[in-house]
Structure formats: C-alpha cells, structure tokens
Amino acid sequence: MSLPTAAAKPAAPRVNPLQRIWLREIGMERLWMRPAPAAARPVIVPQVLVSQPVSALDPVPAIVAKDIAPPPAAPAAVDSAAPVAEPVAKTVAPSTRANGRPGIPASILNRTGPPPRPVPKAAEDEVVEAPRLPVAEAVKNANLDELREQVVACTACGLCEGRRHAVFGQGATPTRWLVVGEAPGEQEDRQGHPFVGRSGQLLDAMLAAVGMSRETDVFITNVIKCRPPGNRNPKPEEIAACSPYLMRQIALLKPERILVLGRFAAQTLLGTDATIGSLRGRLHSLKTDEGAEIPVIVSYHPAYLLRSPSEKARAWQDLKLASRGI
Ligand code: SF4
Image 1: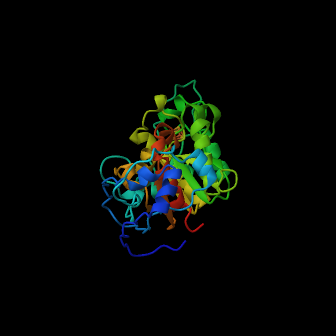
Image 2: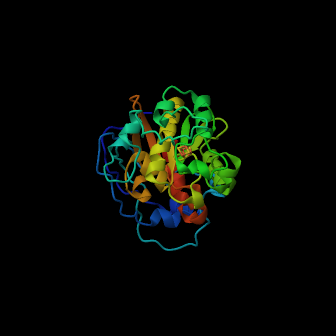
Image 3: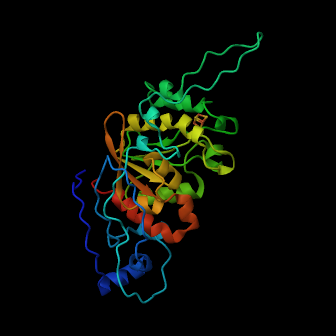
C-alpha cells in the first residue's frame, strides 16, 4: 500500500446536480450534505499514517445498496455540501495510554503480561495443579492451533466461569484483513463463533460489498474471547488477561489491515478515549512488538448499525477506506 506522507486538507467537494440525483437515489444525499460532526482528535502521535478521505461519490455496489446502504431519504432541499470523512489520522501505539483506562498495555506488547492468577492453596488430599503460566508467556511460541486450544481451555480471568464457549475467532488463514469486535454476545457464546446472527449477516454483507469474505480473505475475532455476563463492558483486569491472545493472533496472522468494529474495541486497540466518531473515517497504525505497522480502520459495530441504519453510509465509507490499495 502506498500512503502519502504529508497531510493536506482537501477542498470541500462540490456536488453537481447529477451527483445530487445519484446521491438521492442511493439514500446518501442527506448524509453527504450534512456537515461533519466536530471531532476530538487523539493527541499522542508516534505512529502516523496519513489518509485521504473516502469519496462518498464512489460507485456503490448493488449488494451495498441492498444490504447496508440506508433507506432512501425523502427529497429535501440542501444549501451546501460538506465532506463527511476526516482527512488525516494521527494516533498512537496501543501501549502509550496513560489515562487509567486500559488499552493494551506495554507489558502485553512486550510479552511479559499480567501476573499469574493466584493458585489456591490445596488441601492435602487434593490434586495439586502445576502453576499456570501467565497468558502472555503461554502464548509466546504458540502457533494458531495451539493458541486456539489455549483460549478454549483458558481460565485466566473470571469470565471463564459463565461462558458456554470461548470464542477464539474464525476465518481465512492466511488472512488479508483481521476484523476485531468487542466480545462474544449471547449467540456467539452459544455457537462458539464470532459475529453470528443478524450482526454477523450484516458484517458478511458489508465484507462482500468490498469483495471480501470470512471464508477466503478475513479472520474475525474479538478483543475479549469469553462473553461478559449480560454483555457488560469488560473490566480492566479481563482486558489485561485476554489481550495477549489478540496480540498473538495479530502476530501470527500478519493481516494487511485491521478493521476494528465498535467503540470499545477501537479504544482498547488504539489506546485512546476518543469517540468512535472521531476515530473512524481515517487510517490509524498499530505497531506490533515485531516492528510491523499495520493499518487500522475503525468503523461502527454491526449491532449498532442494525439499531441506527442511518449510519450505514458512513460504515460504507470506512469499508472503502479499508479496501484502498487492495
Ligand atoms: S476472557 Fe480471555 S482471559 Fe478471560 S477466561 Fe476467557 S479467554 Fe481467558
């Protein structure tokens, strides 16, 4: 992928009458004409990737118009055009976060990981288990199959107690994209696979719109491998315990892109508290401890898109951004 090295804010595109008719037909006229929301920017800067905004005027495949484009908007008069996508991204390595909210900590990137869970003192007539290695140590030399076995058997945090299945991930290996969500939901926990049900169907349609599929191009996983009770947000210690699995997946899969879906996953992977509205629409960079820099694109979680279909057009922009250079 060739990425420009200098940021240049593009002039606001003008929309001519033919383009406006086209936008109206695919239901994006209002979104395109609406001024972009003010966005808080991440302020820490070490790894920088620069992107140009994705044009909302790119042709939209039929599958997108059918499955992820928003419903047609009623014709409405608009006075001015304004770009939706933000032009430049500056973001940080996940380990640089120092605000108390857990990103993926440096200790995990450095493979030292959290301390082992205390092993209860065994009674004399109990079988004494060998002390477990910290997750970060255990995954260090694991291949993908071994890593899967470790996740399935993992008891490194309390989420193991309520799960039906630990959800390791699913998809193509080798892979081109890694899709990362938050944590398994109820259906994922039941079936042991990521992104099933309506959210999974929408994700598959979104991927198909850019010529990708989980069977041939994409591996899908979550930051947290076991379902938090009631789908609550994962706790800091759960993130710390589970993050080495994701980092090892990234190291093994070496994806060309990482598509991060949803606020929680984006904030955790990028180590920021920035809003998803300010993170999406541009390229970020994840620097692994192997020295690789992997472009990261943030978008909305399919479950959110099902609740807020008007945001599907922005998700389409994010997919177009992710598919650049492929
Ligand atoms: S959430 Fe992660 S760390 Fe916790 S038990 Fe499941 S696999 Fe292990």
